[in-house]
Image 1 (cartoon, one colour):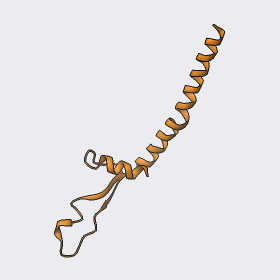
Image 2: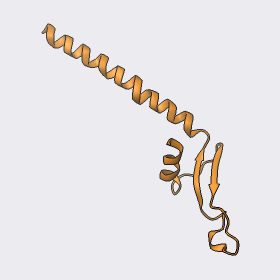
Image 3: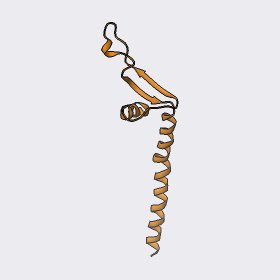
Image 4: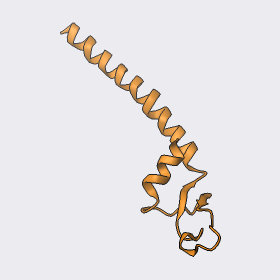
Length: 81
């Protein structure tokens, strides 16, 4: 789902130069208004899934553990005082 959301958010803002993935609209016979080279329906990069994986590990595991450790230390200091 991450690359799909990335594609929706960034089609107008970014152009991927590193390992791009692009899926164009299928061409329709006789209808040049939907030319496949005009508007891709999906634009992302093969780099996005590993980066999202790293971000999810940081946001879902490392930061919560970090804040848990900090809050435990603060609670222990309050109990001592």
